[in-house]
Image (cartoon, rainbow, N blue to C red; front, side):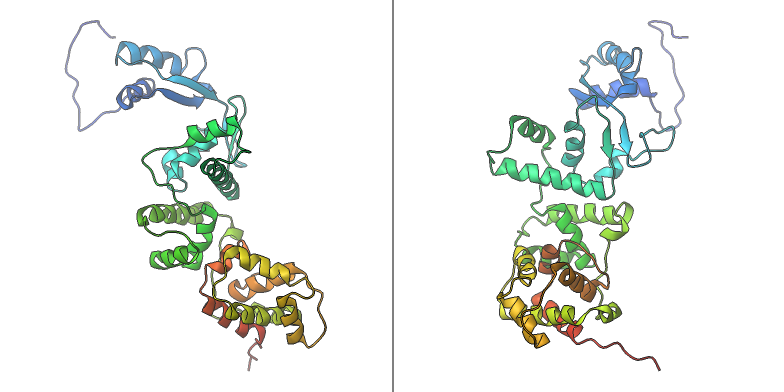
Length: 341
């Protein structure tokens, strides 16, 4: 029983914790919260927000924040997030994986009456890509950017945090090519045309990517660069091996090739009369060959990773030193498996 204007002593053994309905409005007051998004379960009559409004005014002397009520957050295929069912990913856990502005974007881009779909696996990369494209449009003052998109971006932005220029998905590739070595990451970042002046921001992005790969990345997003020519190269056709030899010659003859140029070079092999098509024909000692770029990309991934697929080829190839690519592709083009005794 609570008696008004009474006083007393409560024994404390080193700490204490407010109950949820008192803790929430206390945080509004202490942190100076002006806007608070929350799930619809807290918005019901007599719910946490209803009681919190009175408590924050009458006890803490602070105005309640403007409410933004949203639907359930659906966690991948597990269903609605709920601490009572154990289907939950905490904000602190997600901030180890993505920058704060991406989580703000997740909430702000969704209409309040719609479920918020969140999957920390592959769909997370898609969402980060979407946000990064929006950010790039905003920075370039792209005329195709509508008022609604501008407002979403403005509300998603966070101050006092790093804003790395390196795309998240590209760092996923760079980090794995570098085998997690930060010094190698910096070398690849620089070689890829990005600034390395702000190492703190790059480090934060690397930490995000490392945690995502460890906890949430699907198997196909992970890869390991083989130290030697993988035995799987033995499955490549003569045309694929000829391509690798020709590609090595072309890389060696050029000073520097960007990720986009690598991508376009591979596709150029299908065009009769292109330099790469001609070099392949010479390797095969036959007229202009019919080439399917899909087979060529498969040859690239097989010779480096020992698997038939991998990350976006342009970013992937530009992450390596040219000498490595020339040596690896040449070795793969003449590879003969060792015979077992």
